[in-house]
Image: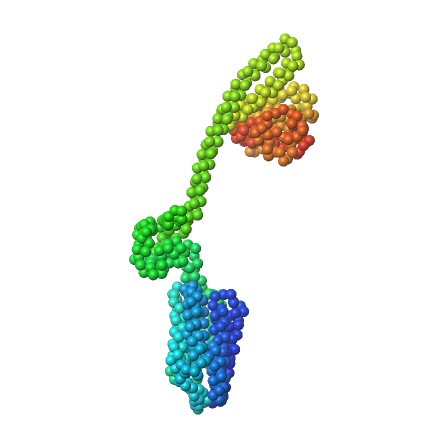
Length: 587
């Protein structure tokens, strides 16, 4: 029999060591995951329990037995509380426990510690303790007091309730989670059954089977931990997701009674309280007519106003039906999103859009008035100016005079300025519209330009190089407007070129026909190229400042080319390298 007792001793020591190793392994590999810390404490407690009982059955005196029993009771009272906390944490149900309820779980274990270790004063845990020698080994006989039965009842309740929580929702759980839960339940029920057998007096050799059977439960825990990665497979319970959602959720049954709601819903509807579960939604939230109408009509979307100004909130309510597999309606879900910020943003955007439209209309009107004013003003100026030029020409014919020459020259410059301003005003007001587009010979256009500018360019000691394309080369344009554009560009080239040449030539590709005017003048800095089409812009250089100009020639040319569906571009490698202007018209 001594051999059998030694075998039990070895089994208990192995169970103690294996429990300890499992706890340390879980903590080392997954300490930040749910339930791991509680599991570690549980395995340490089980290890102490087995270790103490191993030496209790090998003891030969009452003091020795009591010493090892005391060692066991360092762990026994806390095991049910830790098991319950572990299950709650593992399933994500700990959200239901406030701090006070967490502490309440440990009330009975705390009193168990107090009553057990002070039992000599009151015999409230054990009424008496005596040695009992059976055929196999020396053991202690205890006569249970009232608190022992409170302790053992709490022990069984916690173990069974924790197992019930693991079984809850079994049908909705995936196969991996089912196996994990089953292994945990088996691992705790085996020692629990041993405890029942021992308390009932049916234990062989009168041994406490709970710590012994723990060795048989450990393989199940090891399988859950190592094979099914117990803490890696911790499910994100729907309660945890439910409570952490930023949107409010209210769940109704098929009678429109409130079944559940999350914290976000209570922030939206202050009327919602836990006591309202089971009540009809049209009673609890009766002040929200649109919500009640939505539930009654099953409208999928509704916008609800909550509160009053200035704290008015807008809530988007989305209704979903909950049905069984056979289509039977069993409930409804209301998803509530706070769209106050979006509503305010949309309202602000609408106000800004309206303001922008009003401003645009005012600007457009002001621009038209400005253009009309400039056109009228220019017209009124041009009439007397033409008279001045005419009379000056007559005076010059009768008696040439340098002062009269100056009058004529400056009058022509002023007339050119007035014409440019009038033309720009007409373009902006939409008065100038490109005429009918027609296909014309490019060579014909080049001939007109050469006749018009040949002498003027040569008079400045510049070469005018016109490269005529093939007579078959044609371009689709308003010929009068195109020639005006070319003239404005050549006028600019003459003004800013003191030596060298001005070239006129054509390039063609599959998409467009390009007319290019290239000069050897002062050129343009790259930083100024993007401003060249701005109205009244004049390049800031000492040379350009010495030249008269309105800064409207290229903007007018660009506007006309755009009306013909083309593009005007200016290229220059920098000051001193000349300028190329390209007119591109689609074929």
